[in-house]
Length: 277
Image 1 (cartoon, helix red, strand yellow):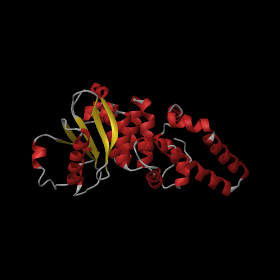
Image 2 (cartoon, rainbow, N blue to C red):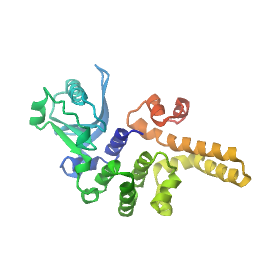
Image 3 (cartoon, helix red, strand yellow):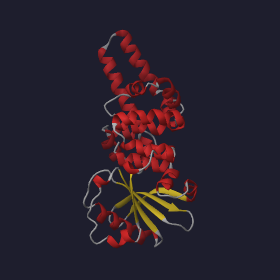
Image 4 (cartoon, one colour):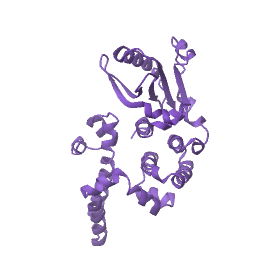
């Protein structure tokens, strides 16, 4: 899963954290609806917009985790098409960067927009300790932590906010894509606590209800017991596939098409389409 998709996943799931990031009270999130907005004229899509439920500022949010010298020209083109389609209203573009290193300096022609305060830039590596600002901010910081630091931060966050286990596991799976879930649990030295919290998550329950997870575990156990190496390999492959497919509903809610999801997860399009909407 791309980092920007994880950012939008966090914004949609924890909108109060966004308002803390931009310096507003967390409770202001109740007055907004977060959604992806299609701009029909030029086939643009704004992946994240906080649209006010009453008179207030619209926040157009972009996560930019790589250097792109055409980023600001494209962003403002999308913003003004958005204003044309959805009506002129107070607005502010909020760009979330991992650091200043990936920000384009190409703002020629747009200086007035920056000077007017219409663009707010957030650099995750410059935020204070995430736990001091709240657990939601800590999740954003976890996105950019080096691997070893991420392990320590994840342990601390799980101790203080075990209810965030669903978000933490998504971030760790992204950061340690070469490891299995069991290896990540062992690395964190909190297998039992993490497993217990994981079983409470909606994604885990959906898989469990379908009987897939238990079937995969049982298949692996039987393969080991019988010493059938091929069976073990197939069980592991199936387990990896089902683990990836558990993210399909989340990515659909983020606005990705089935074809985009298949490309992101590196799975067959038929497997994605087999997941009911």
